[in-house]
Image (cartoon, rainbow, N blue to C red; front, side):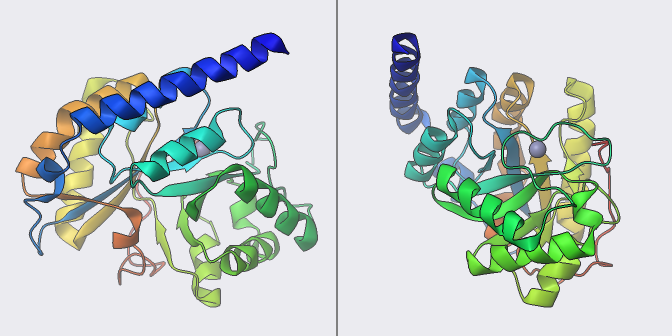
Length: 273
Ligand SMILES: [Zn+2]
């Protein structure tokens, strides 16, 4: 017990040191000062926070990058707090059943749950991820394709006043259909940045991201707080801005005409999860 307390104190101290370092080092103007009205917008969400101590490094990335935080993790609450203090959007990364039966972690939603149980888990999850302004699915290739459970999920999303980003772990996801039906602001993930964390693979995804942004005015990208990804983004984001792109928080993509039209954007690069 005492060890756990000490570990927790150590983590909090690290968080504080990080914040100080981040505030000293972050030059926000280099990321948004050059933003022109017509410049293509790039929305980046980092998923699956927080499994590891190294995830804390993600706090050094520009504050336009959104953190999607898993519920009921040891560090989730503190990271949400830190992210919010940086002016960063926080999302709840809600675990949902995958077709392969992979373990979801705490408070996961399954297709055999009654609506009341789904509501209960979302409310519990929200308590552990403060400041969440939106939600996206963690896994969910089974859950998101089930109309009944997706409707129950989206009704609670609406009651909580959240927006929804479909991570698109299945091409058959009913997420946006249900969100549109209930009038929940929504968008969909178009590119996964780091299914392969090699430099060459991430560069390829980065190029795809730029092409989509130029074509439709914005792009929604999902990555993870892997050390390789954080390092890659630190190196490549400044040049992205120099090339005339604007890094934007998620709301830039919400209800964009082609963003919530289920036929509007093709489902590119579906991940096997
Ligand atoms: Zn996830």
